[in-house]
Every structure is written in structure tokens, then in C-alpha cells.
Length: 336
Image (cartoon, rainbow, N blue to C red; front, side):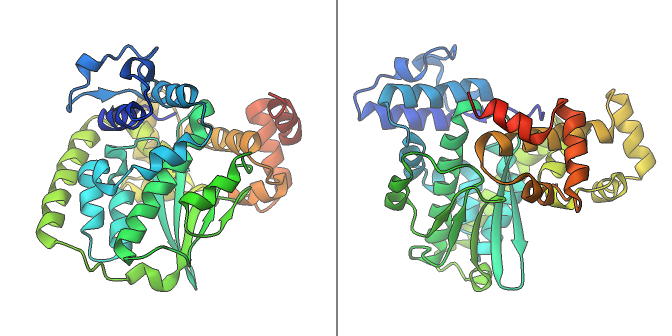
């Protein structure tokens, strides 16, 4: 797993403000986190475990399974700090998504964004890289709502021509989704992504402010440099493989991406007492586990998601990771 778990306190502050309107106290939101109202300063950062606990507390306090949609509806791009400001002041939609792709780790280190262009579609794919436990769907809903806000800000209208694909099974409250999202929604999908017509990619943002964009971009770059100085090669490889699952990158391709020779990459990983194959197994086993626990996607389809042309090879890899077949793993974990 990636070790980059620190997040800005602003998301916790947002949850506290949202629940205050429902008569729920900050103490209830912060229960079991070792955080108090007194230490919620703007420069404070929380670890992922604390943030997950905050989100689960909001769900328990409101008794609302759709709390992710509620919180997501409050995530105006500006709540995403310099990343959000740079995105909504980008000249085109693709430039805005590129900001998320490059700098999202500053704000939400558990999500990677990948932009994909096909013959007729512009696809924004999200990959979760940490175990978010029972808060998984809450995070997914909130992040998809944030992306919708950004897309619609640039389009200047609802994204009715888009389609939303979620790689989890349909929740019991799924009918509520139509109150929040402005396009068709599909569950048990191969990937977590928003698909738009290719023409949306280069739509000009009429609200772009070049000075605001440059200012926010510089802040993103400075924060990224600071983050990069504290990130080791394991985390870089982990995130790169996570965002390129279907390509199943080789050692050589991965080294090339980081402007390293394969020999140098092997040496640097060995210095950290790990290897390329070990990290690849970490990534693939974690993502495969998530799919089997949370969706009804077939094992054959899942093998394609991970870049296996032969499902039998995927099954062999899976048994090496978990000591049981994908079918056995799914039956065991979907009972709980």
C-alpha cells in the first residue's frame, strides 16, 4: 500500500459544518479520531484512518447511507484548494482534468485520475489506491460529485451527454442517485469512470481566469515539490501501476516512465527491501480484492481489466496471492 496518507483538515471541517445544520455536534463527528475542535487549524493534516473514521461517524450520526452524495454536493471545486482553483480556471476541460491527474495527490492521496481518449469518447477514470473499508462507496460518491461540479462549471450546463460507470454493485438507495447526478449511471462496471463525448475534451472554459490559473498552478507545483521530496520510489511505482492496470506495465516500461534504467530501478527497490514484482502483486491483489468484494463483474471480465488475455493466467495469479480461486474468495467475502 502507498504510505501517502496525510490529507488537509478542510474536508473534516466541511463535514462538521454540514452536520451542524442537522444538529450533530463536532464531538460526534470527531469521535474516536484523537482530534478535537480546538486542533482543527487550517494547516493541520489528518491521516487516512482519522478521515475514514470521520466519514463513518457522519454516516452513523445521520443514519443516512447516501451521506456520500450529500457531502459530495457540498464539494465545490474551491474546497479542493489550489487544485480546484487551477482546474476551474483551466482553458479547457482536458486541461482541468490534467490538473487533477498531476496534482490530486496533494489533496486526496488515495485517488488517482487518468484521462483516456478513444475514437469517440473522452474518459475520466478514477483509481482508489487505499483500503477505505466500509467508507469506500461514500468516498466514491463524493469524488464523482466533485468531478461533476468541475465538468459542469466548465460546460456551463448539466453534463447530460455523459455516462457514469461505477465498479461496485448497485446500492439499495441507488434511486437517489438521479437527484444528484445529471446523466445515466451504470453499476458493476469494469472501471470507475465518467465517459463524455470526445468533443467535450476541448470545450473552452468561458470562466477561465489566466491570472488565477497561474497563481493556483504555482501553488500546486510548490506543494507537489514538497510532497515529492517525501515520497519514496515504492510509492511512485505503486501509484503508477495502480493507474495503468489494464496495461500491466513491465519493469522496462515502468523504468522508462521514470527516466530510469531497469537496472537502476531494481537497485533502488532493493535498497528498500522490495522488488518490482512484489509491488505489482500488492497493487493487483488489492484491486482484484476490491472488485470481487464490491461488484458482480465476472472473473473473465475482471481478467481483462488487469491486462490478462487469458483468464486462466489471472486465476493462477489470484490463487498465488490469496491461496484460493477468485470464485471462492468472492463467496467468502460477499457473505459478510
